[in-house]
Length: 204
Image 1 (cartoon, rainbow, N blue to C red):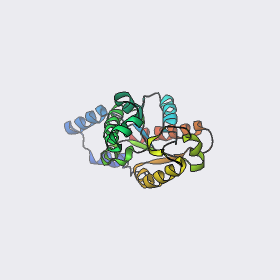
Image 2 (cartoon, helix red, strand yellow):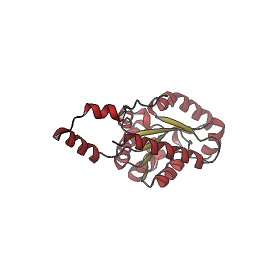
Image 3 (cartoon, one colour):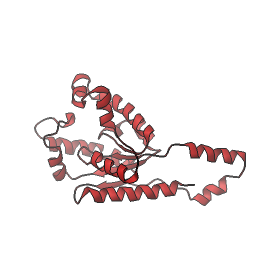
Image 4 (cartoon, rainbow, N blue to C red):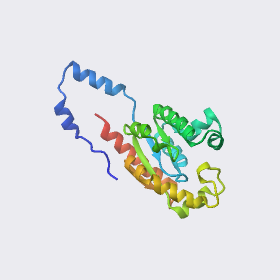
């Protein structure tokens, strides 16, 4: 996984002359919304728990796309049963647009990055991949009502889904943190520090 190339600020300055056009560009830049901190990753990685804490530490808002879908359309399991996964993904795509528009910290559902339009939108934001080991996630997903993990062996289904999605996760993310061991507070602190560095790098 590689982070996006960043152009040095002095190189940018060399390409922008002073004058009305430059002033207009600076004004447009100032008016543009700040990129969101977006958490992606497999089910059970802790995106919602970590995301809430990161938002609190940064003093910003938190959005969870699964919760937006439930708010507007009802339980996710019922949506899968009544309309199928493709319909749910359409609703999820709309929820992502709403959440990114709010900015702050955003937690995406595990399969949200499967949508190409969503991946294109994420290019303008700071994307964090949360990972977790199979032996750890088994206890986290036990007893939970997740439509894609139905069947006799939820942990094995989780492993297969994660392996299928892993290349997309890694290609989409700017950085990754593992939540398998240690307190979540350590992961939160690391993400907050990274987010603050990214914000400084973006400051003109």
